[in-house]
Image (tube, rainbow, N blue to C red):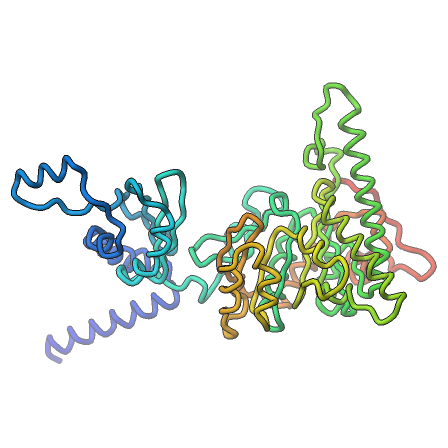
Length: 456
């Protein structure tokens, strides 16, 4: 072969290797190929791009006078910037806005900046008065989401559950956002999000309580790690009574501990208690909340009203007692019945996957941000797991949870069965499969299993 043929083969092999690297290891490709190219493009075209997007301001009087003395015209001044720093999914620059500029100006031009610099996305975030952060995303980070390397991030009840489209992780922090509503149609990825949540909590010393009135079909695979499971409306009603009793006892503990000694540290929640007396956190997962609201007779209506009232009480008071709610469903709105709107108002966190109609997205996100509700209606059906994540502060973002099969999630729950804290009140609701996994005798119809005191 001639030298030109060998050169052509080497070029083809190198191009193929880069394509494979970009597809299989996009982070490595970005660090060695994508970032240098995009950074040079940004540095070379920064002033012209800002001017074309209307993000410059006229030069100062001193600059105009100096330019006239030199026989030329003073050019418009772009915002001052830092050097583009690489991140795991793109690059970031810090900008100092000129006088008269606002972050909304840059947010409105984000799409134009994306096209000008050939980036996948551009995100603008104000950091402090007069300054903002401009983050460029090099590729579609939601196309293939891998689990986070760090699971607990150093504090209890803190879980990275979904990757945001800006490359950061959506972290579920129960102590900051105590209660959450998760909506999504069938095959939207809602169950995958819930699996990641349960597996993350299963690795911590947390009491997991499940309410699944679809005869337990969704939560039964995780029964080995659950401290209690109610699979019928009657059982759910009784379980909520027990949870209210537990909550009242915890409030009495907080009051007694705070007033026991004049030198004692005063607190209004369980996290201010000493470690040796602090009760174990409880996370209550309600799958398909609409099943709790359905009623076919007057007796069902009385039971429904009672359960909704108990859920509202837990949502209003549970945070201080260390009891948290995760409410899941396909739809959630006032048409479910009395108390539905009041319960939804207590659920600070909102996660909306693909839904079947626009009104469902409005139920979850319209009171947070109209733009978030509009974005939820545009989630494609071929992207299961993609969701709009928001909270009552008004902030929202597009995110996707890493894929987790049901078998792998159930295996994690079986492997962590020894970490189940024991609450005596919940012993009667402990799933039989969980007792079998721990080697304890199964409960009979006449007697509930004997539970040990909490040893936290």
